[in-house]
Amino acid sequence: MCSVVKGAKPVQQALAFTLHLRTKTAAWSCAATRSRVLYPGVHTSSRPYCSRMALGERLLFRQLFESASSTYTYLLADTQTKEAIIIDPVLETLDRDLKLVDELGVRLKLAVNTHCHADHITSTGLMKKRLPGLKSAISKFSGASADVHLSDGDKINFGKHHLSVRETPGHTDGCVTLVMGDQSMAFTGDALLIRGCGRTDFQQGCSKRLYESVHQRIFTLPDHCLIYPAHDYKGQMVSTVGEERRFNPRLTKSLEEFVEIMENLNLPKPAKIDIAVPANLVCGVHEV
Ligand SMILES: N[C@@H](CCC(=O)N[C@@H](CSS)C(=O)NCC(=O)O)C(=O)O
Image (cartoon, rainbow, N blue to C red; front, side, top):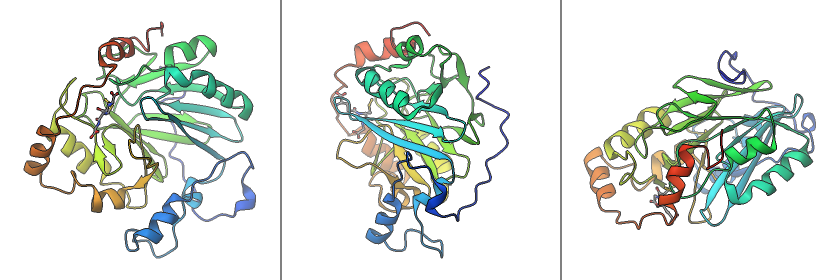
């Protein structure tokens, strides 16, 4: 078992601290503040909410985009220890991502895929060849090979931070949502998209399971928890649990209505599905 997973003490981060404590390399998003202005009342906390506060000290966070598949990759690091993890890296942007890792001077320990993607090939296998010591991780229910098979409740440690693994099946059997230790952010993969959700018409898709996953495992997070999905097709970058609970056009419906919606999406198959799924089952064509 990879040493960055399991056995972490929960991160107890103070929410209030000042900007001068931070390193200048960190990229901070104030999207939650903007959404608070757009949707007053969504955040129930009495104090003004800003993701800068919830992200805590020593956290470097980058949201990266791959335009052909509209996939988001996330880089997270402890700015003091330099330990880093990457979520859902894409083959086409491997060089860009490795250049950034090098420039920021962080040490990638783990490349995690939120599930076996059907629309693009992961760069995890090739990244492992370029960065000796890097390990790969994916759910044990994905059917994919990797160094680490994740289970519900596992902790992915990087420096003083950690992500908790929540199984959120429905789009595929092996979908997981990764939640920051302080519940300030959740990386939902394709389970929950911004004002949408993953389709359920191939791989092991099941609308009822997806509905239960989102309601029981994601919508139970605090309203202010930032939602970072694996894709967006409309230029949206971040949402919150509170926003999606109120405005998601599919998941605000009853289970029966949701199933009906999902059965009638009539989406074309992802263009790369026939090469992406077999490739991702072996970590992106390259050996793990
Ligand atoms: N056109 C894209 C595939 C778009 C697509 O099907 N996206 C998936 C997630 S990637 S498998 C999805 O679940 N979409 C939900 C939705 O409502 O759009 C391609 O050819 O790759």
